[in-house]
Image (tube, rainbow over all chains, first blue to last red; front, top):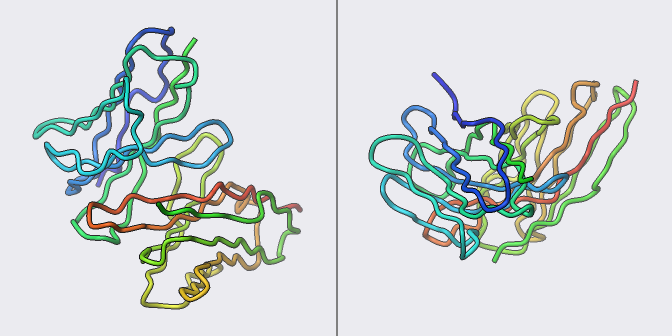
Length: 115
Length: 114
């Protein structure tokens, strides 16, 4: 049973370019969460999605960031016009059932470096 | 919103000793408290979790305690080994009816010395 998959593992972008991060949840999971981890800091919630729906985006910056989880295919976190402050590790996690206390399993992360 | 504080930020112990990491949370509605271990450059891995209907849970050398009245929970690692060296994060689930996002503490760098 494959775990949570993320790609690419490392991504380098120049300021002003776009970054697309992909996450495939664990088999059977329909809930996806994105977290950002700045160097030597904790994980900060960004967005929670179910298939074709954004459930909670309270942690997403208002501009340049967007997320989707289409009916088919992986969840995508998109950052437009990247700036150096976007450099971080972006982790997605997935959980299996609706409810309040589902265990979240993390992917290996995408390390974004903005030059 | 929920706020989770974690202490200490760094912890050094001798191999074989016990390690204790403490967290406090602010939202009394939180009802799920997982602990994750993260090695350098790796993904956070769940090591143990506790739900609000129990006060203590144990899994081999790892245990977690929860005091809902005081709104704090702790991770206890006994007989520490060098491979326990990592960053440990506590988290709380401030369920608001819209999903179970996790609010994380700032992490504890645990170093187990030979």
